Each structure stands twice: as structure tokens, then as C-alpha cells.
Length: 122
Image 1 (cartoon, rainbow, N blue to C red):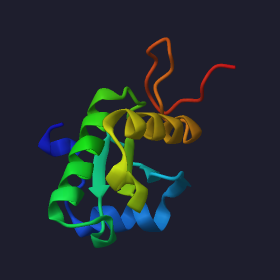
Image 2 (image 1 turned 90 degrees about the horizontal axis):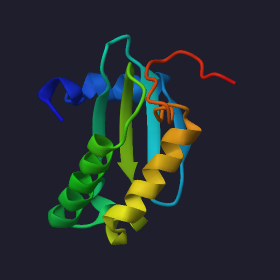
Image 3 (image 1 turned 90 degrees about the vertical axis):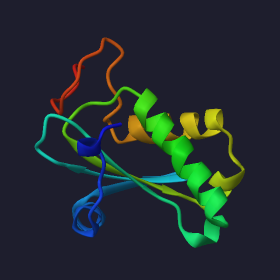
Image 4 (image 1 turned 45 degrees about the vertical axis):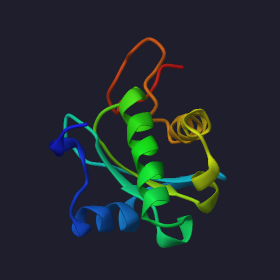
């Protein structure tokens, strides 16, 4: 995940928090906002209630890898917020959790490989 694909500034996170849509499950909260770019930008949040720095960094690393490996439609700012149960989750549990949220948000890439923010066929 390159530098241009990351949300870095507080203002970028604030825009997603204020104007984006939210989906949640036991492990992760997903916030999304269209960004009018040809690529997605991702942000990862692990608050102090998750645990010490080692635990928070591990969860963010796992979420980054899940986001990198998951094919999504382009043109979105996406923020993943780890919930406290994510500290005990392994990669496969987080992967299933994130895939379910992205599917509910309708930004998971179609099985035929189509990308973009256009409406799905159907």
C-alpha cells in the first residue's frame, strides 16, 4: 500500500468521520466516503483501549494486510476502526470480518473483476 493510498492527515480522517457512512460488527467498524480519485485511500485506527502499543500495531498491521489483499471498487476513502475484540483475533477472522463489512458497504469488487463506483448489475 503506497503513500498515496493512505489517509494521513487529521482533516482526511475528520471528513470520513463527519460525512461518511458507517458499518460495524464485533471486530471492526468501517467508515467510507467517496473521494473522486482513481484509487482508494485507507486509514487504520486502534485506540488505547485495545491494549498497549504492541497490540495496537499488530492489529493495524493485520488490517493493512487484509485491506491490501482484498479487491475493492475504486474511488473511496475507507477507515477501519479496530474494536477491543480485534486484539484477540487472528488474520483469518479479521479478513472475514472486513470482507463482510465491505460487502455490506457495497464496495467489495464484483466477482467478475469489475471495479468503480457504478451501480452493480442486477
